[in-house]
Length: 525
Image (cartoon, rainbow, N blue to C red):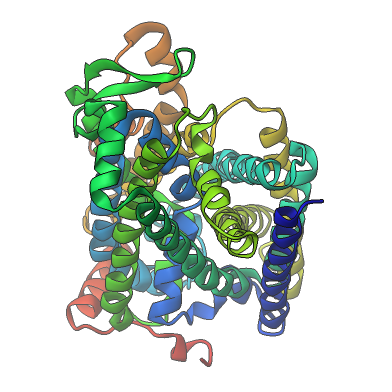
């Protein structure tokens, strides 16, 4: 075992031990299903903001985005632009109303404030759904898409362990899954949220330190620009025109990006309105009054982190003389090349943090769908909080094993898996949630139609487009468009009850007054 591997083992071990320690701390505070799923809605602005970031920007930020820039240059940055706009929009438009509405909406079965812990339960209560199909279909979509989303993180995890330790995919995934499952099962939402804060800090610092070291080695920004331009002038064009040819071992000219590619990149921003693992942070913040501060912290982190990730991709182009055969490994390869083994171990641990911070949140939401929206909603409504808590912990393990199977035997890159799940959630939930908090006359029929249209289109679009249409358009665009259309077309098949209208007015009044529920009302902070 060489010096680099020894330092990496040590730093990875310390990091993983710290994550488990936080899980043990949170275990003592997690005594009910509400604690496990939303942490008693007591997140402060910093924790809510950084947890939302860490839950969102997984291995895609440190592996997928730099790799995409490395392959095709600045033209790939349209995705980052779309994400920045969408993230800011979701904090401004959705976060305040979702925080109030999920707690205040009347329980469709028993009356009184529902304190909805999941998006599926919120939708059933918001629309007083007599069929219960909203809850069933939404929880099914959550479970299906999270299998693929968690699998994307495990693929990234396996690649990292292979790069650093030479481990095969099986052992690498087993180690990663074991640690993530352990602290998630122990501490639930609080463990996930507080480990996210540590992980978000590690990710951002790693994205800052590596460019500083690399640009210094290249002779400043002038050396970086010259190095990139020497490979191909088109790499610095916002409309593309260049791509890495693996067989030729060089960047070659291609067609410039058309409207379809740019629209597809920007459309990624729509996904933020429907990602359950991110929206859970909006639901779990302690007060609506804390949202402006959290939004400022969160969006600032996101914009700067994505800008640094884009910079890392360009640095890789200029730094390595021979084009990489695995572009998504450009960041870890730069770390190994530029830093002392101790520093390299710390920076590589940040990549592991990026992967784990998203996987844990997704496992938690998927297990909540199985427990709250499956077992409790349709099997045993009177199950005790302790029973539900342990069923949730078992569900975390079950989802993790299913995702590990997809990661081991599937054949997709990190970017492909993330793109598939992102479109599914964005189109399946985004239009419905956005309209549900702004449109008083929306009904369960419109919501169900939009959910089915958006989710089904996201699942089938790539197959249909490849076989028949050949547009190359990202599935989010047609799926979200059809979801909005289906909502308006079928909305009239349902009706708005007096209770639904009263709930809407009450939430609007609380938002306008700048008030809203706080954690103090329900759980001591």
